[in-house]
Image (cartoon, rainbow, N blue to C red):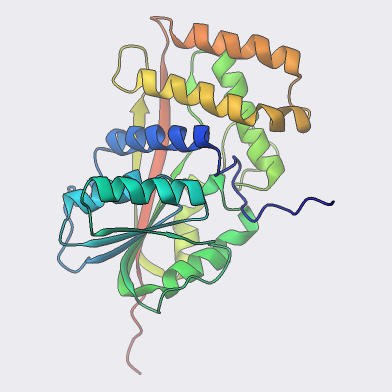
Length: 294
């Protein structure tokens, strides 16, 4: 029997419990590294932002944190993964967060929300689940469900970090190459080992979609030995490289024998006291254009 193609376009299997666990920890790392849920707003929300949607919410950490911090707002998280949505719903129930709602949805299809239903649409790390040719249509759909003047907010990484570990750098560059080969990001062939090619074009993507008054914030997380983020990111490295090793082999980026040697070096070099590294992200946001009266 011929195997049916996967409906999702995630770089990693979204129904994998290990990926769900990894995303939960990565979400905490990124939120803390950015300085909170809405650092560009001083981690407050204006009264005009009541209905919020988080796209590709995964296990729901950002939605749950936002719902807890702003109990008078409704926060909806959507994701294609059934295991992650079920987990997020269970966490919301356990925490008594009735204003956190989770729904299964495929962002490659029209969303089941009315025009102008949301005041803010948030999306993080879509570079790992949205192919480069799909960005314009998907962002236009985000804009459709935004009210005029509502905020579209995107957060994306430059790459998977820059360190003084040869082993980590080798696999991180390999990951960038895999993204390029699989159709993610906007890096050129020359730049593909070093960047996903997404952060510099976020303003253009927002402009093309529907947005005015576009602004950006850059965040550089210090993941060096001894920092609060060090252990979390080293574990993140190990899990990502392990989850995607089969795709590395499939695309001829490394052999199994070589990978086993390099991943051991990742663990060793990442725990050395002289380990230094940073991980850069950019948040870009803008307001949906308000039609001018004729």
